[in-house]
Image (cartoon, rainbow, N blue to C red; front, side):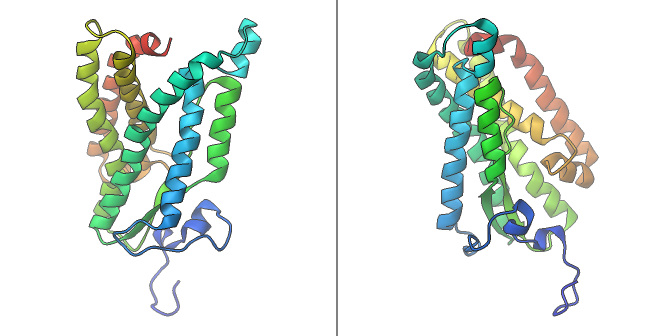
Amino acid sequence: MDKSSGRKITFHDLSPREYMYFPKGILEMGRPGQSSTLELTHIVFAMLVLTIAFSFPLSQNSLLKIVLTNQGFNVSRLPSGFAMAFVAIVSAFFCHELSHKLMAQHYKLWSEFRMYTKGLLTSLLLSVLTGFVFATPGAVMFQGDPRPFEEGKIAMAGPLANMILACIFLPLFLFVFYYEPGAIRDTIGIICLVNIVFALFNLFPFGPLDGVKIFQWSPAIWTTMFIISGCMMILLFPFVRVFIS
């Protein structure tokens, strides 16, 4: 309870340090509607680590594969894997978090991205060891006292941005699949795949994921988004081995 105002402290009144377990002294909050130097630093660092992490499965490199196949590390594939990963992360991760931020600011809430250092390092280590990425890069923090529909829309904004991008690029990928084999097709396919994965994963209704808040606000909207994302994944899945092989 806030003794000065008598108002109950909610989850969203917690500072990013209290929620994400950041060291003390790194929370210079910028003014609403702006991005602080700290936020930009966190975004750039998170994008760099995620790009490196995704470049390993996209270039088919991992210690597990070396052990199972008795083949060496394919260094020549890393630059192309890094390039495709960068494009995918910019389109999926950056747009996802930016959409959360803009929606929160639309409702006059202070909002900035904060990376989760342990999650980023875990994602990178898991990628190098197994070739599988479980991305927990951080989240957009916001403070205030949003109404339930505002909180639901803020949560919905991220996965919805990924779904919109996937809806744009998926038909384009299917169109160029037979007519433009090569780097262009593969890059479009990676953008589709990562955006669909980001949307579908974040829609699961458990833990700190967006799906929890969306489902609490509107089960009908959550169901619609989850079904559409699942259908897009089913449609793209048969082609996955083509552009990551």
